[in-house]
Image 1 (cartoon, rainbow, N blue to C red):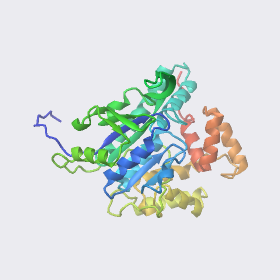
Image 2 (image 1 turned 135 degrees about the vertical axis):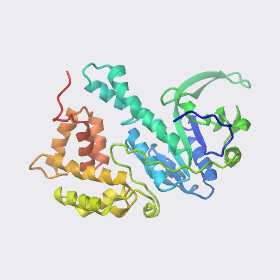
Image 3 (image 1 turned 180 degrees about the vertical axis):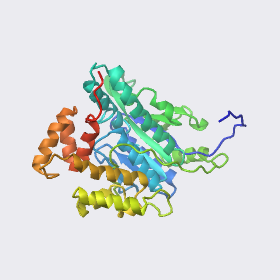
Image 4 (image 1 turned 60 degrees about the horizontal axis):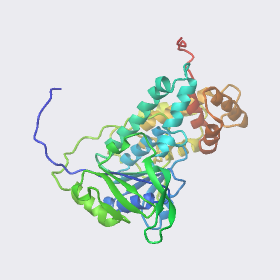
Length: 386
């Protein structure tokens, strides 16, 4: 496609905000304050990695939540796919740090790849696979924020400083936040970045909104959100762009938790499986002995109650999940104690730690754990590279 030059013009846009701070600085509460104002009566989705901390404010704010115990970047991508499919106006990721340094995050994935490599070289092997995983997650955040507001929180590394109280002359020790726990320079991906301290004072460290440049805001509230909205809506309307189909990530999307029944994907949305495809799905279900109850639970993870409401990407993921049953050793009943014991042996062979196994065993079903392990096992039809 040939290059083109055009006159620059300011377009209306959506918020892309990062709030950085130590534990107890008010990151979650402040993000919910902003989200409520940005939504303007619409829906807010929170991706919670902080052990249900966001739900502690459910009496003050109206939002839906996805609560994760595994922080693989692919799960965040799938959560954002769900947010887009169900038309949430605001998405809060609390916190993005977990997908870097938490269980199954980028750092742990890099270590797994390194330990499986012949060289043990984290830069040659580990980061060669881990960097594209992280980049795909960041890219999905950017595409999501083209049409809906995005707020992320980031934990900060902690330090302790000595200060002299000017009034008393006594020395005191104070905890302060420093570098955010994420990949270096993650701040470049956001339009507004602010540091929160333990007094819930927000210091804007980066802003493309002039009125907020280097602002210091005690207890950020609705007024801050309204200032940001005024800046975002000042410009020509953004042209309607056809929504691209979200990239499919490996694995399976987390359940969308709401006070209401799961919201169906609108029938008008293109890309549902055809009748022959649905027939093939039910044929696979019968061949592999999947119960109706197990399939219904799987569908609820996608926020639908019928296979005909699945998107094509979700349909393929369900087929993959069913076909994973073919990898159950002969003579074992899927989900039985014997099958779990055999699966644990296979998890060690692909490099899972005991902690990873315990987490998967506790939070995932047998078929999902099996699918994860099969994806890591070498293909027996391919020769080993020397």
